[in-house]
Image 1 (cartoon, rainbow, N blue to C red):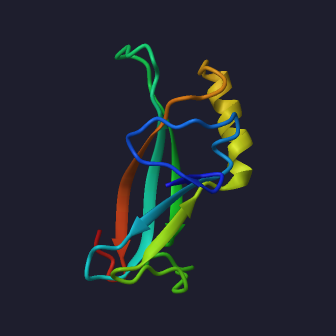
Image 2 (tube, helix red, strand yellow; image 1 turned 30 degrees about the horizontal axis):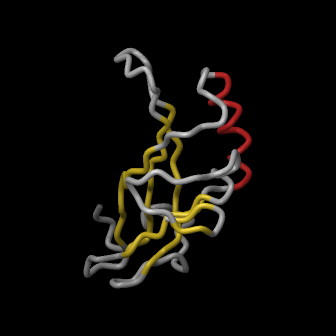
Amino acid sequence: MEISGRPIETGKKFAGDDDWLDGLKVTVKNTSDKVITRIAIGLSFPRNSGAADETTYLVEMMYGNDPADENFDVLKQVNPGATAEVMMIKSNVPIIKQDLKQLGYPDPIFRAQLKIQSVTFIDGSM
């Protein structure tokens, strides 16, 4: 994983600036024996209070397309053993920051979690 071109380790704290979302990039390696056509990663912003009734804001970072989509792009494939870079879309960052502010999150955001939500293979399996 990288933020603004600087590698960071998952599960460890890192020093970032207020615009760390702008440069967020996750490198995913295909360790399967099938070609991957879509990767969905959830970026969530947990609340600090831990209250059960507070929802967590979630954003999806996507790479590629579902082979069932009519606009399937065969150019975005991750072959077995290869890697793909899943990046935050720059134009989404101001919207995300605005949403977080409206929802009462602290500014700047200092806590987030990444989770692979799904991986879709060229044969349509997940």
